[in-house]
Image (cartoon, rainbow, N blue to C red; front, side, top):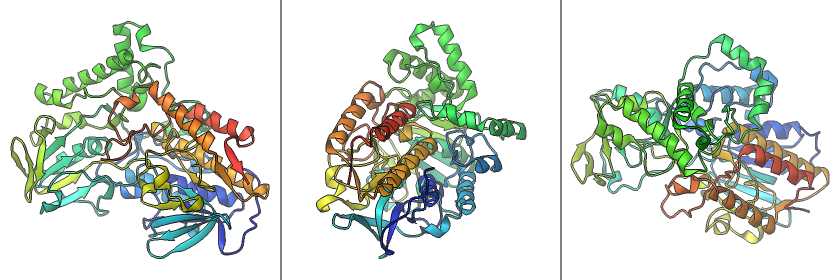
Length: 539
């Protein structure tokens, strides 16, 4: 961390306003405080945690190994905290973030239960004014949006949904006290990550579970298990090297990636490698060969391998085929990581309804009517995901130079420089914004890289007595063109996914994250700094 920077602003203005108190917001507060800067954080929820506060549905857990889905900035924290499972469940992740808030005394800098609805830049004073929904108001030299990539729930566009008389639950707003589904007829919409995690547990409770599937998911076995003391101790002994290696990878995770092409070896050897990694579980399969996400034939081989595992697991061949994804390449939607998902469809109380064969006509007062029949239900569960990456910012009236709305600037799709800043909006930073690797990586690794870069930039501006820092239009245009070109060299854009905004009607289509990988991206960010913050205008 850089040395302390003395603030030279009036007492009514803080140096930095932070929006969001999840992984990014907490680290921002800690790092800004270490730089001697005043900061105030605003959080909608009554507690820290961000998406891990709200996403408390049954089965919610991280899909990156717990020991890696954690902060690396403090060695004492790494050594003192003991993760209980390979993939920790939501309550443990939230407990961890609460512990971080207490350990570093961060709560005193957070205003809870305050949703920021507007952020306006004043050119004369070079400050941002933030407006809360409840009338809260704050001014700051810099504004950092730590609003998260997956924080705005997406409800499905189904006719008649509001007419249903039973209970309706969304995975991202699950009741804190839980839900008793024993003996109830439950319908689930959504078979992405949330649905895949919760469906096995819902099936254990419900008298009958009906899964309404529009698009089947590629899901990988978690092989989750309790972390034995010896395994945890081994990680802690080697934490520094483990973190170093992770930051040299595209994903921010050590997947033991193979640099060879899947097409360089014969079918038997390729299948053996896939099978080995399938047994390891998690995202290991993604690292089997270097061209799985860039070559159609290589991708086709791994996709068929996963489909074969589905057919082996699901006893009814017709159900198995409906669960086999064929409409998009493997990995172009973030693969799910599950425990017993496909096995669940062998249960007598679980039924799969393929909406491609029998589309929904409407939700009725008592259930769901498809083109084939009416399904009587007691409650509905919506595991329909998020307005990803831009949804949270889209709910805030952000205005930059001349009062120009960010919404107008992004009307045809988000445009950023490095996913960190947008031309025309001085002193505004985005943490893991569109145009950065973010959701293609271990999010905590990407968050740490962005927070460190952003706080160092703020410190640099203040140390030189500057008033503002702003991305230039030229640098932004070049970065957007580069990001689009990198994505076009992959198979990612071939899927209708939340990566491209396809799950939100009317949302401009663009591949939102940067597909060049975290390691190369971090090197680019470092080179920008070394070249005097190339692409930024400092005043």
